[in-house]
Length: 168
Image 1 (cartoon, rainbow, N blue to C red):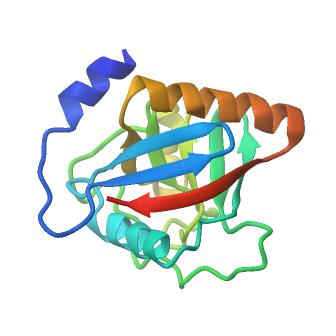
Image 2: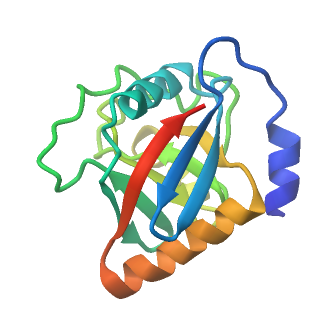
């Protein structure tokens, strides 16, 4: 199911913009494939945050039906909020297992550097509070094994450190 979704939904090429993110964590590496066909503004915002080093040394701190990371609790301010929730603007991608979406409060156009990786299908997130915009997906099975290891460690220890995130 995970592999079939990736094969069916990821056939595009990007120009000069990054097409992937590589997250090095204490549990292993997560390769994420960006989806600018779904959320170009969001992808650009996240890539800029990555290139500014904002995720380096931060943590995954939530694990339930998603794992979530960002600047939460770090004392670092995000570089402003996203100007738009792109949930339904481009190619619609549901919040299925392995997709990454922007976290936000109950106001849809106030997301920023907080994002989560879905551990399971979460279709309720497609509509709740304007929808949670999917901007990337876990690129391979090894990366999803790392995601699952992070989920377990966050439940046991409270957080997992992100060493570096790079845009490729």
